[in-house]
Picture (cartoon, helix red, strand yellow):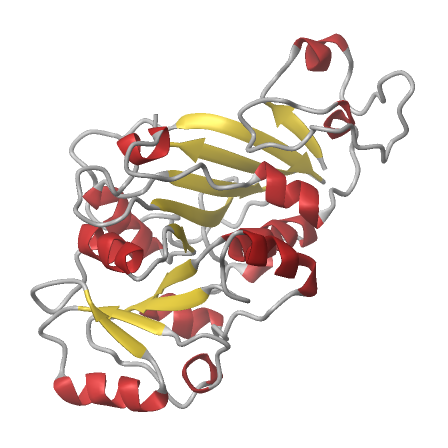
Length: 302
């Protein structure tokens, strides 16, 4: 893996993969991490496998707070609750398919899965739509020794909670996601959800969070409700319908998009579905990594 952006004078002076003088291919210069906005270390110009610690530094959440820069532009701006940062992690082929045969795994890669795991390890909560939970066979997040110290230092529990967005609560509450997670699974739903389904979810051990006045979930209320529970570092893994709702509501702060060097044709969904927004929303490129032809990009709300 190598960093293609941000570009520095040092990057432009050498061809990709050329090791800087006096450094080996696996050397990591002190201070070479960061959130992708700057401080690029020389070793990141070399094509090699990054450690999980380097990935965690490269994808670190911004500092959050009521008066912080992230809060001023982020999804919590102007709300009564704590500030939060909502990031999405999605994968797409060259021709725009977010899935193949209904699942994202066929268009993923080993590097993509390392980043997937790192993003989860950085998050307080992972948000997913009910259909994605069913199609992808979601299980509880598992504790990983590699991230234990980092999460403890950040004041986080051993694993992120999984939050399922569901209007009808048409979920199989006998699955491990609900019966045996390390931290209780959350279900985000509307006030008009069927009482018997809410009771079934709670009986299975899930925590139901009302984030809408009607049947469905209102994205801005969902972000506030999660923040009020102490979940300010938010990660959504879609699917496309949920991501489309978050985009339309203007609550998405960051998109981590993997571009797979594949073509699928067909009629697979894009990463975001639903009605189009009135005016396209412009995001700024923060960083771009590459491994084996896969591009790993980060875009943020300006």
